[in-house]
Amino acid sequence: MRALLAILLALVVTSCTYSGSVKERALDDAQRLIPEDPAAALKRLNGFDVAEFEDSATMARWALLYSEAMVANNYHAPTDTIVNIAISYYGRTGQTDALRHANRLKALMANTDRDALASALYLQKEKEFLLYKERATTRMYLLLGLSVTFIALCVIVWQRQRLRLRTLQNEALIVEAAGLRAGVAREQSACSEMASKLSSLLESRFATIDSLCETYYESQGTKTERKAIAEKVKAHIEALKSDAGVFSEMESCVNDCRDGLLNHLRRELTTLKPEEYRLFVYLAGNLSNRSIALLLGENIDVVYKRKSRLKAKIAASKALHTPQLLSVF
Picture (cartoon, rainbow, N blue to C red):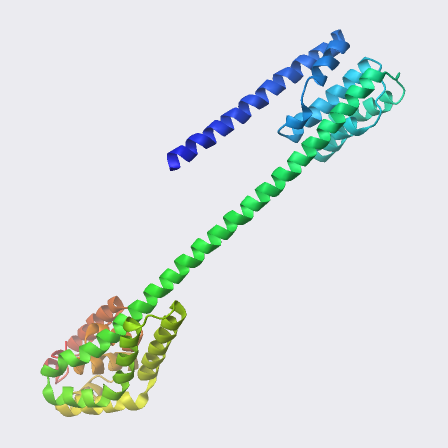
C-alpha cells in the first residue's frame, strides 16, 4: 500500500513538473516572437488556457507577456485586470525590474488603439483568470481541510498512545500492588512469629488494596472507571508509605523477632541516614525487593543499588553485631 502511494505521488509530481516545463518553453517562444512578430506572439499567448495554470508565477509571467504583446500590436486593453496580475505578483515578491516593466506597460495600454477582436479575446482571458482564481481558492480550502484532518488524526493517534501508556502504567501499578500483598504472604514461612505479627499489622491495610486489585482485573467498566480504581490503589499505597504508626509497629515487630537487631543497628551505626534505616527495617522484615521498591517509591534497580551500598557500609563499620546485621541481606 505504501509503495502504491509512493508511486502515485511520484507520478503526480512528475506530471506537474513536466506540465510546468512545457508551459515555460511555450512562454519562452512567445517572448522571443514579440519583437519579431507581435501578432504571432499574441496569438500564441491567447492559445493558453489560463484557467489550467498551476501556479501564480506562471500566471504572472503570462500576464506580463500578454500585456507586452498587446502594446507591441498597439492594441487597447478594455480593463487593467491582466496587467494588474503581473503588478500584484511582482510587487508581492519584490521583483522590482519586472514590476517597473509592468507599470510601464499599463500606462502604454491606455493610449493604444481599440480593436474589437483583441478586446473580445482579452475579455475571454479575463474570464479564464477568474476561473483560475476559483480553482486556486477551492484548492486552498481543500489543502486547509486536509491539513486540519491530518492534524486531527495526529492528535487522535497521540491521545491513543498517551491513553495506552497510562493504561500500561496503571496496570503496572496494580501488578506491583498485588506483588506487595503476595510478597508479605510468601515470607510467612521465613519467620513465623514475625510474619504473623507483620501480617496482623498490615492485613487490614492490604485488604483494601487487594480488593481494589481484584476489582480492577474483574471490572468490565470503562477506561475512566479502571483509571479511578488505579488511582485509589495509588492513594492507599501512598497512605501506607506515609503512615508513621505502621512503620513504628513494624520496627517493634522486627526488633522483637530478631533479638533487638534494630537497637544494635542504631547504637553501633550512628551515621546511618533515615532512608538507610528505613530500608534496613524493610529488609529485616523479609519484604521482597518489589515490595520495598513500592513502599519506598523507587525503581527496583534503585533498591538493588541502595541495598548494595548499605551492605557495604555495614560491612565496613566492623560493628560488634556486624554478622547479625548482614544476615538480613
